[in-house]
Image (cartoon, rainbow, N blue to C red):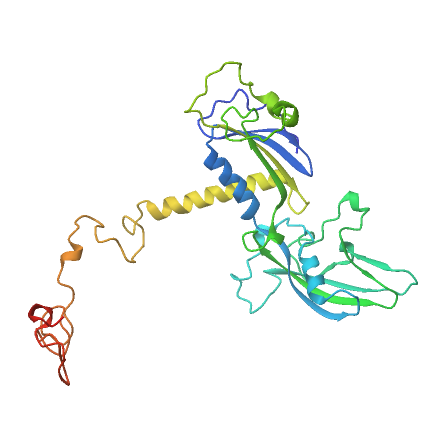
Length: 342
């Protein structure tokens, strides 16, 4: 992930422009310009909630003699980050033809640990072993960072003689369904580092400049000049992102996948609203507005005639009798509201 921060400075673009300032295996920092705040916030929300990943969704516990409840262990397992490389080839379980889960929509992991020594034993993410056929050799593998000494997140501890044996089913999903499917671990979002637009009301005791130190992006924009008049029509057009990942998806891939999701959403909307071979709204044949395709007289028609005749908008029990039922005249009169009935 080698990026030149100045690579796009000389490129003129009429659309949004992304300039990357830092990129490594943990985070990527970039500036989004030539865009409004609605688009920038849409990108942030999409990266947080709508990028598909894989996470443990079903836990089948065969033996648990530890002090932790089954539900507690299942919750901890669901939050362990799993490698999502090749996730686009894995189907959603709701779209798969299988009854519950299979190799096309899930990854199976097993865990079997028993403390046979005299001291407590740690059960970590490295002890989760993928089994069965997989799309590739890394999909669904627990993420082991260097900071964890090659062990991964701690799942539980076992006392001497205690045992845990279980099977996990990892499935594809997005963070809109559950936070365990979140692609980034955190996203920093900032604009207007000097607060020239006064969108922030900074509380302070004595001196705002001392109590609110400038952000790292303050050097990227010109500070307000003393005595400068406030521009009521100014809007933000430069946004700064800091995307951090837990390792399941590379940080630069989170950004590209987020842009791809936005493109798919816009393409779907254009397809639904644009003209196609099926007509003005494609193959849509559902209810429409009474003013659709010209004319507002749809509400003034006479309705439908019943299969029993007697004129439009009339029941099978008579024409204009009004108040007359098959069992005789109602106590409200036979002529309806016009003759003192209602």
